[in-house]
Length: 93
Image (cartoon, rainbow, N blue to C red; front, side):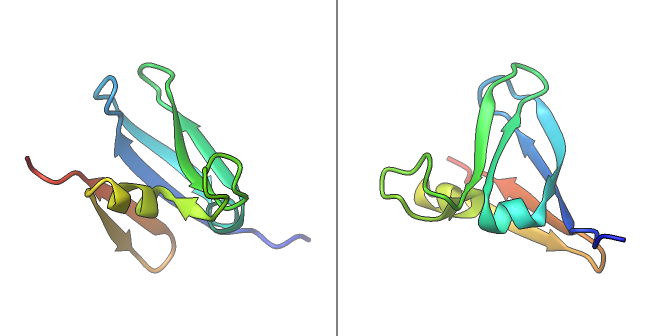
């Protein structure tokens, strides 16, 4: 039997339509591949991880944590024993 790869729960609010989204994503893809998720409300695509340099002007590894940090926003990681959870919180203006 094959090994089950880890999953992460991604929960975010779309800035375009304000829909709260919940997605299950692969830890392997988050750390080594590309993840694009689609908003359930407006069908807008959101880049979550690009470890292959496909969408980055600098051809470097980037993920939602780095993207939000560059925008001055806060990412809060919530981790439990079984799954990794990430919560993104925008700074109050």
